[in-house]
Length: 160
Image 1 (cartoon, rainbow, N blue to C red):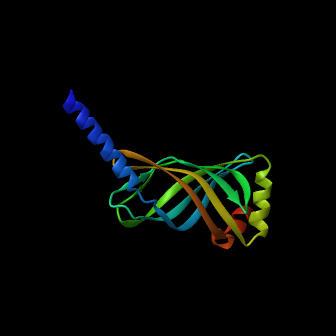
Image 2: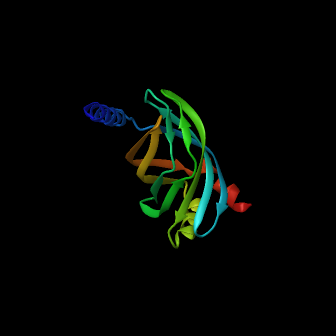
Image 3: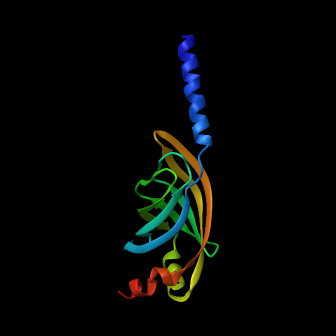
């Protein structure tokens, strides 16, 4: 019985050690933004991401949710719909499928921003869920970035 307790405590200690050494992956670039579904309740899109994994082990970013703010205004909840794999100590290009469940009344505000603004301040707050091998890891993130809307070709998408 003592051997079992020793082994169990050793495994639990190693799990805490590995998860405490987790460095958050870095989002370097977003390209090829493509809207799949657009309605007054939700926006579903795909985007190509350039991600850097500074860790010495492979990561899988699991389904995660984030609060989305555009120009300091709450828009809704973004959900990463599929796992994204990132190899250790490398920069990977991955396609992410994302859905934003919009707050009431935000659809028309987003359309007006997309047509009139040249750039927006994007803020994501939430918990990044990942796994290193079989060990689940969660990290609270606050991501801010200024996006140039010309790079996304919204005017072309909205005119179709």
